[in-house]
Image 1 (cartoon, rainbow, N blue to C red):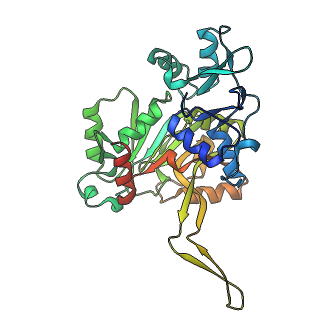
Image 2: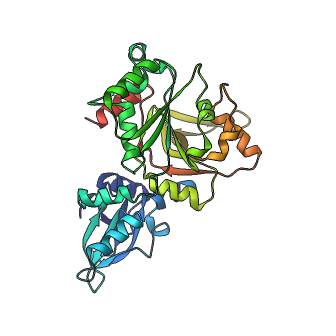
Image 3: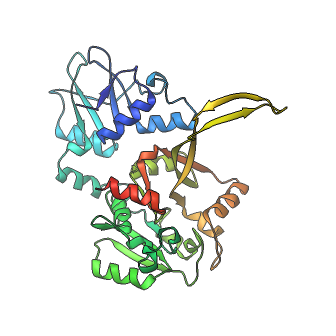
Length: 353
């Protein structure tokens, strides 16, 4: 049960680190006698980030005091399946009659056969994904002088294969790939690959910006659509993101990541008269940044002009003006990787090593 349980005195930041290590997206919270008192998930921490809660504070004010659990000797495999799969739980504590935690079951510890059942019953089976892969990838030259950015390898898989796998793992099996630069190479690659999922190409006769090609997708393809850049790889619970989108009745849900930027110098704080107030030694700043993944209602397609350069920021401005609902689904910065520039690409290669 290493890295799967904690006590209330742990900081939110430390809880994030443990969740990253255990891969279960949650922690079981116990008291000093190992009795179950709650749980804390990456979702709880996302809410804390959105509410600007200090991450150095303990989890006392953000943890769930009514966690789901099963009692040893009083549950069946069906009970476990219902809790884990139908409710999309990633961790379930097993307790004795005195509420002492005796073991913890995670989604990843269950059999491959059970995981296949999950995929067949997944709520995302009818949600398509559009991959914006038409850019030139100038920040990755000279590689992209030869190959389109989606086909740059990360170990034994290409960038686009890793992105698609992240979606097929959640039951998504219909993809649209927007192409322009070196499009014939991409087509030839997938013809050779012979994927089992459904795939259609959206050809841009000229560059259409970060989301302009969405105008070529029919609204009949689905009520909601995932859209992803082709230079970000996310480790996100897509089912949870979808439920969040539906529950809050958002027209657009944007994946946002916490990002910490540290200034490697002492920063001078200056008064209005020019006097020095103080020096902050190597301060750090927390931001929420766009992680390049979106979930949108098909109605937004109507606002995208045909055959014109159009960026996601343009769409957001229009939707905000028309009072559409736009939400953020927040994740820790360790939950996504940027492969669109050299420094970050090298980190991504190291991550998969």
